[in-house]
Length: 451
Image (cartoon, one colour):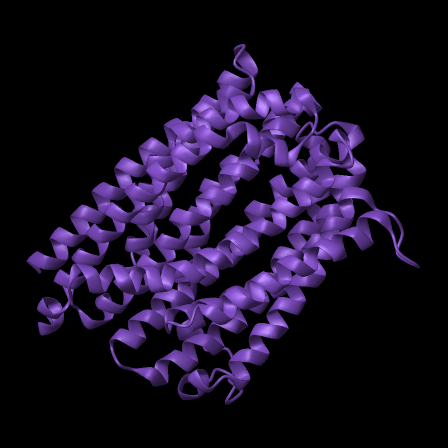
């Protein structure tokens, strides 16, 4: 074990966590802001447009996060190589990650082209099918850019340079508004597509973001020692296996968690447009706030991964403890914000009285699970840094799909709870995931220190 354990202090580690977390948080808010802008702009068209976007996003988000989630493997692998002082490995990891990302992005694109065939099977009302289907066809075209951007982002952030990604994300967020207007309302040869136009705008933007980050990495001085574009390299089966072995469980774990949230719109679709629209508003609000603990979790993955590479177990445990304390404080602040401003926040999304009334009620359920959500995502971030991904994958599958999903369906469809039933199921699932992930983190730490 490294002697550096005694060299780290609480103040130093908190400073390092926030140095990483804050630009990552801005990036996460910006990227979540894409969906926020789509939802707000669609909501001001009609309840039908908002419901169509909710259904389309309900399928796109799980697919997008599954495949981009696999590429999160780049972060702990690069962080480990950085901590172990082996920079020659970093460039290889980045190049091989880009190959994997390209292949996965093409597969994801094909899945989304076929996804509209599922909508009638899932009981989505016929009135929503045209716009939801076109949205999925369009947004799928951006998937190779999404996965390759995720690989480059993981490389840059793991080296301690999250700010270029932040700058690109903010510029893209501003660019999305005029792009949405063009495709939603039509301009010149581009027809008026309504809410489905958001899919085309987002796909174009994803490609622009990838090319911008690739150009910055190519030219940036800080990337020259580990330059991924210095040489051309064929696919290496060793690294592909390592990336997929680490990344596939990460992607599946994220998929299991996020899909339970996003497919809730499909579960609720038979209950009518008002219920679906209100659910989409509440989910969008809590999704924005989830970016806070998610950003902390990414920072924890990087810091834990670096100490894991150094085999500095005491410093690694200190980072984990401080991370969980920080997650608790931030969750309590989020709960207070939601309670005090719930009416004002919902009013930003919709002017429809019926939709707003149900959405404000559902926000109360979001308040109830903030602490559990912050703890479980922070624990998962620490486990990723320790390259433990398979166990968390099974935990999330059990918590969300074996427990939360059937509870949510039963309460929503077979009792008078309606949308609140789905949200009650989410609270149960998050609580189970939180307890199991924290227990696994404790056991992993105990095993490393005793070895």
